[in-house]
Image 1 (cartoon, rainbow, N blue to C red):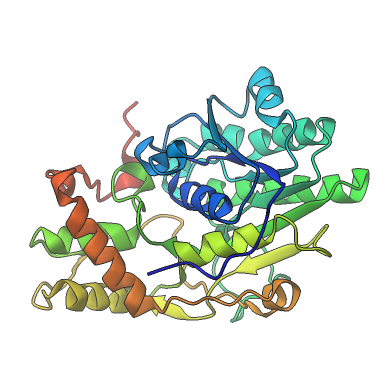
Image 2: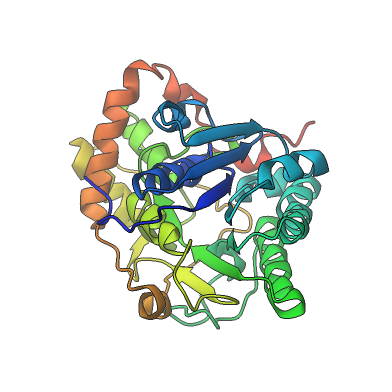
Length: 345
């Protein structure tokens, strides 16, 4: 399975915050493949891993800064001589349920600090990578960019704050900023463990171990899934596509999948349709329905996803099979109710 056809980005020097994470590391690989002069990653490795950057670290155009976006000296160092910033560094939705203050500090305050430092460094463009979680549950579908934003969690609220700051920097200072809202990204390097664990990789890991998958609630809640190869290709387009300053863009497939259907698709791909799901309590702050309208993004960038969900699931199953030797005890590292993992601290 391969990404979209190459889009030449030669000459650009790009910073990716959170570049050791799932989406960020794929974006790094895509940018290097598109011919950029330099890709610099800023990451504190709270969620990201060095393994995610294994291929990138072999490229002389790649450099890594280990640090926190909330530290001024670190930001100044990371932004030196940078043309474009992709700001992905954040803490996730389940993390916000057990540590809302830190979630706010990294996601909202951290984004404001990055904007200020990027403006001082005179970057050409600042791409803020938000999330569909800012919408909350769909009030109508498909959800376009003007759909009301009623986030269910502090994570969604903190990411919405980052959006507002990013748009304010465009309106107040004339800074070239773009807000992009990926819906549910999946693919190789996706998280199955801890409070970053997502439903699709967790389901695959369980089924490969011969265990029944877990569905929270009735399983009728839906998501709009896009493969990370498509997500990273779409993000790379935002580095230099003209006419995007001040824009807010959805990044979804335009197709919704219920949790019940997801478990069935994975069971078929794994070859264990006999392992039917176990239903647990509904998760707090769980969005009921997400379905993005991709037409505005397509009209401005020409982007269209290429990976069908069934193909992407089969590809991810094979990836997890290959990774089994590196994580022999991975099923034991799944935290089912990962939103309460830190409650006792």
